[in-house]
Image (cartoon, rainbow over all chains, first blue to last red):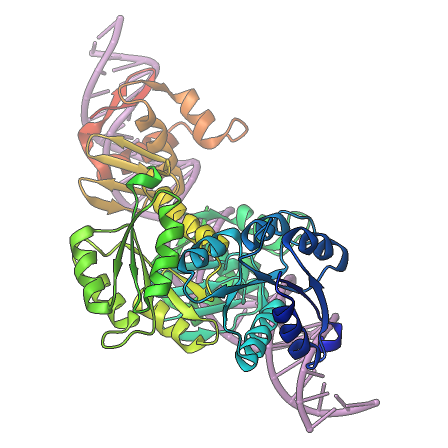
Length: 228
Length: 228
DNA sequence: GTAAAAGTTACCAAAAGGTTAACACCTTTT
DNA sequence: AAAAGGTGTTAACCTTTTGGTAACTTTTAC
């Protein structure tokens, strides 16, 4: 995404601050909108759907924290980035602000360089961020990262093919539990798919080769289990 | 377990971070302790026995990974949950950290929502490990784990073939109750299967060999029962 | 004492799983 | 476009485990 496509909303009651920020951000190519108080800020946020909102904490009538809370509860704006503008001394507001859902702080007096680097950092996050808590499974020396489709065994990073990964993830999700062959087929292959009688075995074989022979126990007539 | 009963230790050299984390966790009701460096962290961990430790990776003197390794080797803290605080980019440390025994990662900059959901997820693990109702049957010195298809008799672990396991599980499910031969056939073999007249006897014989002669009483003309 | 029921043992066939190689089918690289 | 490589599956063959039976002995109940 280019800077020209990025919308930033500034909310502050001091026209000087608005002007300084606006100038600096505009000259980097960002689309800049402004609002003079919290209420107007909320209104413009809804209408313009900005990517980033820079909110002064101290404002008459509706302060930044209150505005932030409203924005966070507004549909379509839950994931909008919000940075607070605050005087360095106002320590209390930092805490309260993070609680309200702030993503970062910009302290006054504003240094253009710092401002721009913070904005860039925040927008970088916008691109990469997935808010879902990471899906990590750890069993002994084995770490399975479902999000990254990656396995670390004894500190060694492995990339497994999908079926092997899913089979491993299933078995390791409950160490020691025996998973019946039918359950494995259901969870890894899906209930409609029909595969031969040796298919699971072959995949187990590959996992034993890669992760270690002794981690996969066979329970004859039932299925397999993962043990540490 | 209520939040008031849960102890969380924060270890970071930056007072700001400690304050933000502390504020957010306290307001959820958790008991929060803090330490300013790795050494102090290890010390407080030993004294306070927290349920969860949030450790900054980058700290002067003793870093988080070193502290983690020490904690993992400390008696009584082997099962404490440990989460690392790390900058998103430091990918290498993820590998090293998991190797050192970390349970999860929290990336900076810290979003209170993400932090709290991660903490909740981790603590959910703590709870489910403790009070998950496992499929375990205990009869005297005999422990039958249906989920793991495993039997422990007098502390000795046995792996029984399926038919023997199921026969034992059936009889032990109601100690002293006599199971008629027809009932045993029905439950263990299934109603369609036809087997010879000595089949059950042979399996009982094998169980007597493995579990102990005197636990299996014959009731002539009726069936068998398991007694302690 | 006798017949029915259960115990015992050894043996065997079937079942289950292990192993390997080959194959179609993709995807990526050249 | 061809070559190379990866993936998922199957077929064929091998090994081990298992479940069951036959044949015989012992115990129990009447």
